[in-house]
Length: 527
Image 1 (cartoon, rainbow, N blue to C red):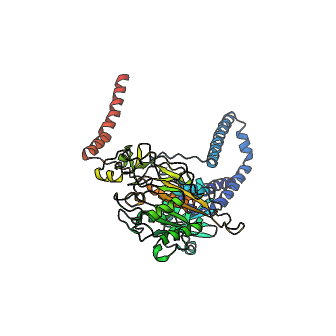
Image 2: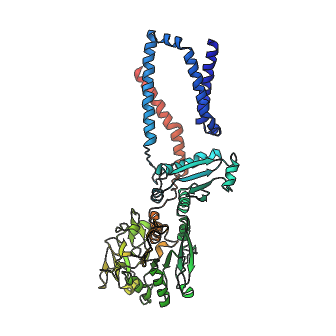
Image 3: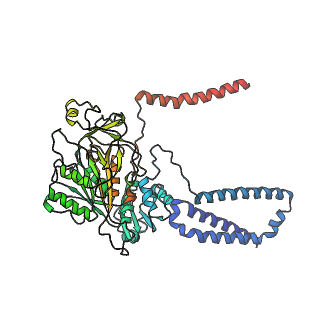
């Protein structure tokens, strides 16, 4: 009988160890479903052995050494209990610190904003080889920590081909997002791509942005320095679709337009085009107008566009904004590129704290008291060591900025962008489907520069995010207003041949030699 109980005890211990291995070793995770029943069987066998040997066990505790041993065991159990409690509390109250200079392991403000607005469970399925699971877990754990509504599942298409086929998986490394019956896929684990997938599956539909053409505006498809190809690519990553429209030909703004962008026209709009924009705004339209300063002192002004901006409470100045603060030197520019670092309070600039620069900008300021009931608000202003110079001819002639040469000069801070909104008329009837959606509004933004969003200027810290925030506010998607994910910095150390040789000999001889010499000296002193 005793021999049988001994066998049961050893078998039970072995089964418990095997169950722990199945649960903890990643290579054996395919059998993890068997770990729990195996652990139960093993514990039952160990318990049977213990019950059969109860007399021997009780006798052990009557000895003096056993009592001391029991006290030690009890102390160990208490310490283990404390450790288990600390780990349990730590799992429930998660706190992480990212000590990298570029916050490489932290989610961006935009991602956090989007995750905070989730109102239903979001499932992320990762279809990759099992050996690659840890690479995805490092990234997606950040999403799980940020939102309790997110769950992740890791699937090896080779081991579960049926699930992969149902999910229409074409390649390894595909992430599938499931939210409210909608599905989206991405094939990268970078934060920008993962967040883009979440934006698409959460919104369920795309917003369409139209760039006007026909007056020398920026080309939304161009990859040249002055083109807008870079920012259009960014719009696509945030679930916008982009198209062009020649209002002079179409006669109206397309019905599916969410936002119309007038990006730096060289000539003025015709009155029928202005009327088409007004009709668009009357139907809760959204308009972004970027008006550059004149290239020459005698260049004609886009009077019709300036009048449209004035109708919405914004005054577009006939000047060039100059900045002599020296901040431009930080990004390799001169006084003709005003830099903004502090922003008036507005939804567009909420939690926005990075530099933006505007090559050759003109002032855009709210009209005091408003116009037609429209009261605009400035959201980008230059620093105090700047001004708007009205004498463009003198500036272009001698190239030397000087304040006060014209009576119309405006001392800084100078506003170079303003925004206004108004309730839609007629308002949509309450109680209809989609009543949780934002109430339709007419929204207009005017910026005194179009260069800031061009391919040449997108490398400046905040220009990309500023343009995207403007479009996010115009399209009434405030959850997209934030600082977006940045690519990790390349922080490699580049050394010359002599520096490499120094490091080599330092690690091979000098440091070990110093340790050895210290030991010899200590031995000699004691001797």
